[in-house]
Length: 242
Image (cartoon, rainbow, N blue to C red):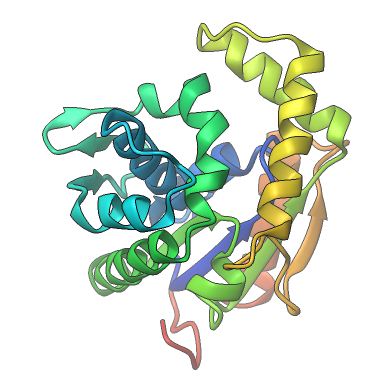
C-alpha cells in the first residue's frame, strides 16, 4: 500500500549488511517512488570486467570496460532486474567472484565518473516521471545527490552485519561461514572507506541510524518518520538539484 507519494530524493548510504537494500526497496514501495541500487551498477561493471578477463587493478582497461558496458537496471522496487545487454545478471553479480573484485573496480576514478553520470540521468528521469526516488549506495549523500532533502547513513555493528550477510547468502544458496563473511565485511569496509574516489562516508548533514538492534520494520518506521518531519510526501521537496 502506498502511504503517500515521495517528492524528491532520499539518499541512503552505509556499508554492507545493514539491511540497506531491503529498507530502500520497502521505502520506495511505501512512498510510490522509484528505486536505484547503485551498488548493483558497480557489480555489473565488475562482472563485465571479469568476463573480459581484464585485471581489476588495470585502471585504464577497467575504465574502458565501464565506458563500453551495456548496463540496464530497473528502477521498480518490486521487480528488480539488472542486465548486461539482454542477459539478466541479477543473481550472478551477487556471487563470490564479483564480491571479491567489486571494491577494486569501484575504486577506479573513471568507473565512478561513468556511473555517476548514468546515475544522475536515471535520478532525473525518474523524478520527472514519478516525483521521487530512493537511491542507495555508499556515496549518494556526498557525491550523487548532495542536495537530497533527506540523507540517511545506515550502520550496524560488524557482528550484526556479518550475521545478516551470512543469513542472506544461505537463503540465496551461496555457501559461506560467519567467520568468512565477517572477514569479507571488514575487508570491504576498509577498501571502500579508504579509496581516493568518493570514499564511503556519511554526508555532513546525514541522519545516522544504527540498525544493530532494529528489525527492518523498525528501520523503515524511523525513516518514514523523517520523511514526514521534512514534509516530503506529496509536496515539492524544496530547493536543490531534485
